[in-house]
Image (cartoon, rainbow, N blue to C red; front, side):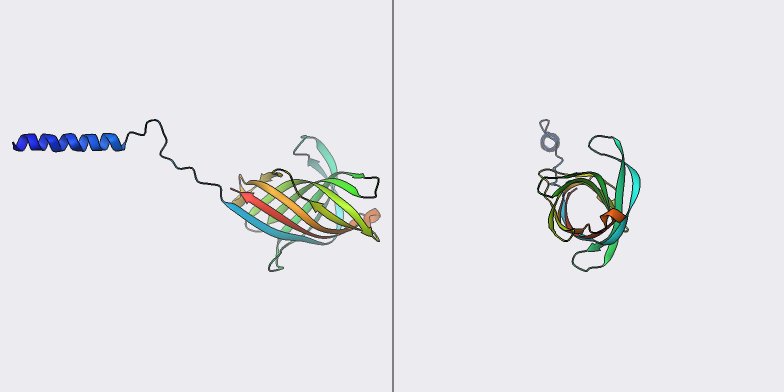
Length: 184
């Protein structure tokens, strides 16, 4: 009797292990939703443009571009957290005096990494060489990310103003707020 009970216990244990390991081809790995983060930063300052060779991330073409590099501020603390570089890949003037610029923007955040996005920025004249700027992407526009932001996807939108009164001298005044929505 004791042997039969032990055999029954062994069979029950084997069946329990076999059933608990049977996944019927379904992975037990649970897919975690992406972590979403929103950063609000401000690029501001009066800066001179510098000419660089820039690769257009959409077309792959090597373009000569004027880039403007300025301090990047945390919107809540107003502390400098890095640098922002705006590279004008192409600008066209519209019939109403507005400008439409294809811009490659890189946010380099100290100790964290960088985020680069493409933006098609509409700049509407407000008067005296000052333009409002805005861009709301219809789809993800982040084209690369490094450091803590590696493999991030998402979008970057923009609201602000630019002062183009000294544009002929290669100088622009920026006061633009960027909202970066990351998915990692």
